Length: 543
Image (tube, rainbow, N blue to C red; front, side, top):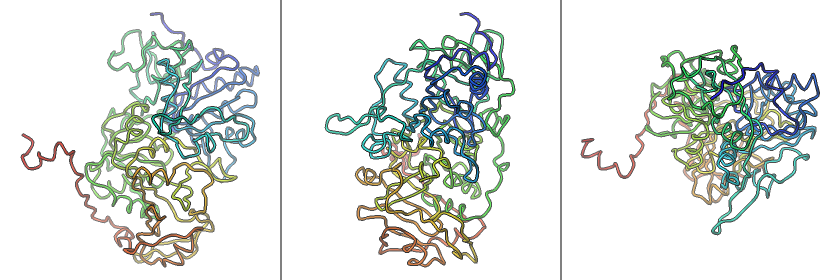
């Protein structure tokens, strides 16, 4: 094996040709090979080349503001098409990230596809398979009978196909064979062997490298350190040097876009969970507390970004940090998932899996339940989490949402009942809606379907919607209010605040008063039932 060339980011950009298909291994907040992407943008500014690129981002590429990552490439003429699981969203009060401006102006073609599917499209290309056949996305905006994942009018409807096998509907996603894979690791030796010791996840680096290498493309690896050849422990090498063509040395590479380096999120150190800041008492915390009542000790539970991500911190406050194993699409298993724009990593994880393998767990329904957020809910129980009219840039996209909900047996959506400026407070253990938000999130029809309520019912899924003022269930007869918060008027604060008629359970109850008091609840979780083949061990012991 020959030693690999060590390039500057600008030199690496010279390896890119016009019309190339480029896969970028990163996620929102972690793992982004930002130096290489910036080098490509710099070359284009200097030379007007490369042109008409297609870039593929399985989860996202860079931070959530567009300061790092894909916005380096968001230049007219440089990009022709983007295929992404998610994109930088940017705060609603600011200008949209550049990539969103181009999408909204129809300056590029843009597809939003499920993150797990995009990883599998690479794996299929690496193995010489035609593509991925899956039920992920059926009945949603990804379905070609709806939008086929298209994000604007400039995008042709040809990337997703509806097919049938043995009388069942499936979606077919064609394999992706990139000309260039841009990946990131912590250390490379001189021969290109890569280790990921400081990474919060290796995401899909290996599969993207295989997809490019096996189809005659090149692999560029951005790394923080370069070691002498063959000094790395071979069991630590996660991408072998035979797949890597060039190295970019980026010694200032941060672990996440918010974190220079924290060994507790890369599994190199276990830190006391008391170092995590307490979550202040708020409406969001009340919702997370109510969601925590759905849990059982010993469960494996998936989390999404937003209010739902507060649930592990509720358990931490209740001295139950190890009762549930949290699984996040980026790869962390166990530990306590972090919040806000470092969501996607966990402090003290039990394991850090490649993201593509984590999606095997999630798409296969190998977990007990999921907690997810929402933007809109409609009369059929459909959920929109990725699109709002005239404000698309404030959303990140589907990400792993469709992969997760396609097979989850128990789905809990968590979020506020209304949107916009409001004045809702908690006083004396009750909810006081002094001024409500002007926009309801319970609408006649969602702007776009990210989750199909009808498919969930058809497949026997259990679905709940937890808000600060009410809990609802998806039932065959319709969305049904089952609980209301203390202090809330059912007609005025719930039924009248929905654009469609809500049903009310005959066994309507009041939400637990302990949710609305700042002190810990004294939460106790019931034990999850053991696997049926292990039930006899409860009586005979573990001998």
